[in-house]
Image (cartoon, rainbow, N blue to C red; front, side, top):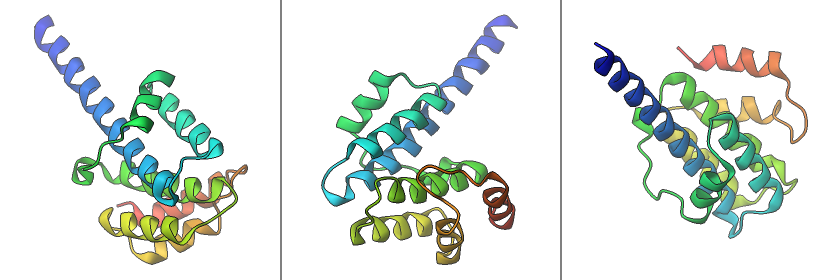
Length: 145
């Protein structure tokens, strides 16, 4: 029985690691959509990676060599919304919003099965240095089953 439990926790850990790398790869691709990952974008990606239990070296390796193809279908509804939130946050964090970032964000929202309205709802409440948790949670409830 111990082996089975150990296998279960190992599988959960592998799935969690996969989810973290998948979400970070989406963010890294957005950050790089204007041709470079600037320091404020990198800092946010490092914080998000750290919050998902990844080391700084793991995140930096992923920044240097992001996954090209990400399987968004494996993300839960909660993870899909969090990814969309982080996409919008990352787009705004450096204070400059480029057409490429907007197009990538809208494209990823569509792939995450969110309408343009979801991006626009988040856009008004996501700020580089302020987290309006109650407003974000209202939006989350609106779109997460």
